[in-house]
Length: 111
Image 1 (cartoon, rainbow, N blue to C red):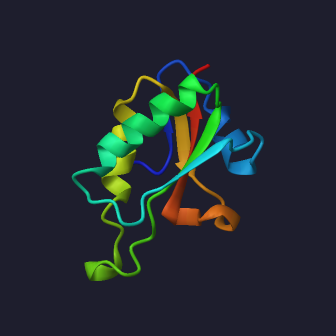
Image 2 (tube, one colour):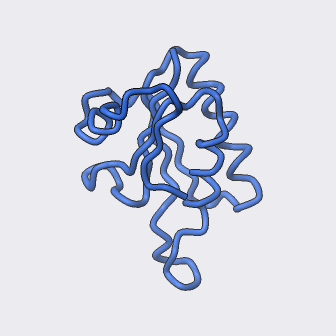
């Protein structure tokens, strides 16, 4: 799964804006303790609720996998796959190190 994603027809400069923190994160979802099987459903529900609340930018924390077998995040790929498939998502990128770095993703939602 890509570290960055931009939906077709969306300006790639949105990735830079997300990385720089030009969009204020309005809500966060922490997936620590959520199973791989349940993560896509949790992400979908969170995105739906966030859009309904009018949030433009959200953060999803999937963890870096430091306590997982092999030291790899088990949730990173399923979370990013769910984001790529969602029609609500315009773009996403890894969060800055101050907000979780590779263990979290900033997501830009449709209005």
